[in-house]
Length: 147
Image 1 (cartoon, rainbow, N blue to C red):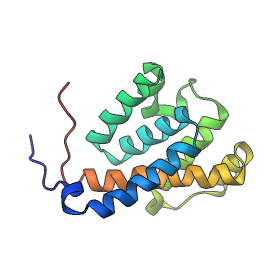
Image 2: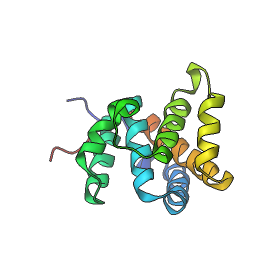
Image 3: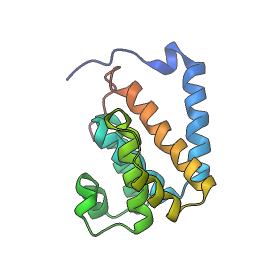
Image 4: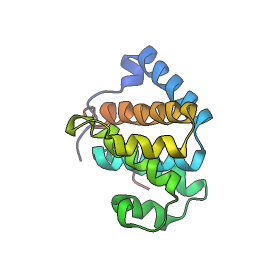
């Protein structure tokens, strides 16, 4: 098991405080169920073991069905998600993999059809926030707890 390289809250507490500000904003402005799906999906794409563990546990404690959590690995083909969730998950995928071609007009238009402009902005903040956390947890080798 690799050893954690850095404890960022100890080394740069003001930076972590700023990210927690983003987290607090996003949590207050995105539907809690959708928020957990987005956080878990982005963490899966990024391969962040710590965040996958955390958000799968958080979603389960909040009442999310395990089938929907497992299905996130293949959400495009799984029948468990609403059109609104599908639009958000497509946006999550494309924003998380932004270097692979950005966000398509098709995805943007699907999100715009399902969400108000403010909701899209809030969703983008949520996706950006989890990607920030992933990009900290992965290089610092933050490990999930053994449960």
